[in-house]
Length: 128
Image (tube, rainbow, N blue to C red; front, side, top):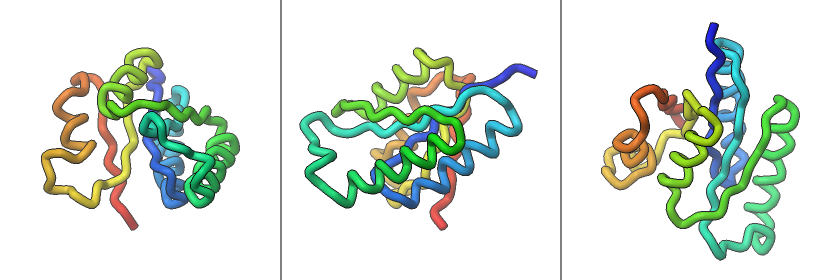
C-alpha cells in the first residue's frame, strides 16, 4: 500500500478538533503522516487574542496526542500557501471543514478545488 500524507487545515477554533479526528481515521486507512496546518494572516497577533491563542494551543495539544505536527504559517495568500505546503510535504489528502458560505465561489474550498493537483483529494468535513 502506498502511504499518503494528509494535511488538516484548521482555523483558530476548538471545534476543529473534529477535523483532526477525521484526519486520524483517514490516516488509519491510508497510512502516511499527518500535518495540522493553520494559515494566519501576516501581521495578525495570535497572542494578543486570548481566545484564539487558547484555541490554537488546544489544537496543538490534540495534534501532539495523535502524533501529528502542527504548523502555523503566516501569509495573506491562504490558497497558494496551502498549495506550496502540499508540494513540499507530498500531501495527497487535504481535510477541511465545511464552509459557512458553501455556495460562495470565493470560499477556500472553491478556490482550492480549482487550483489543486488532480492527485490530491479534498475531504470536506461537515459542521456538526
